[in-house]
Image (cartoon, rainbow, N blue to C red; front, side):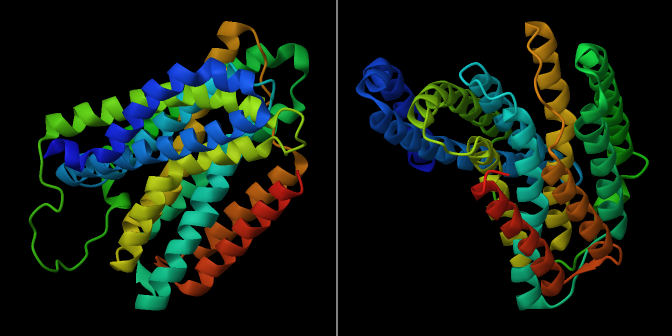
Length: 356
């Protein structure tokens, strides 16, 4: 029974064995074979990610809000960090981390929130949520990205280690304080009371221990697949002229793909609060958790990474957060607001295609 339910995870596990068995032969076969293998492994990683997200949802449903969203977003960020840390050892791109975080924020706020608001708005009209959650997330994201990804543009190269240590301390303190306020004094900011419909029984019955074990197993499987995927992708794209941000966008999409499904389901069920928590919570978690981990790795290896956003990325980030702060100021979303975010997401994709 469990094998049938976890067929995606089983397929991913089998792919791990196959990937390590043929890794050297594929790399020696040339770029085409490496690229095809990378695509297959990306598909396997997404299958494992879907099961990780499912078990995160099971745990989230058992503990309720705001803990539920924290579990979902933390698992997505953990998947992202695992893939990033492995890819960093197999790529010469100094902007991989920066581009991945930037892509994740664009995907979460403009892609997920935009799509969910459009679909939910077309079905239900205006959809309510707790306005305090949107306002809190936006100001936190702006502060975190400003400190870790905009200010570094003005830091002299010889002082990057000092500022990296400062960034790590600030991000950890910010997240620690936010976590306390989110779960204690201001937990009501991130919840909204909806009328109960249908059965109140859990939609995801099952053992908590089993879900934790399978969630951990899924993340380990993703890490092992990412090890081979990073090598084959680097070999397949070498000298191809593909913009560096494409690899970063793939990492962001892999990590966020389960969240997209969860957010769309919530919007169609006329529950916009989980969508806001997922989209903005994932963006904040990506910045505030990924940055200190990667900065610490950079300090440990003595290899500086480029965290400062490019001028175009800075403009898109500020435009996204300004539009989000205007759209999320009244405690209700609609399809028009969703459309504005989705237009920004389309613009982000066009800039990525142009290599900007």
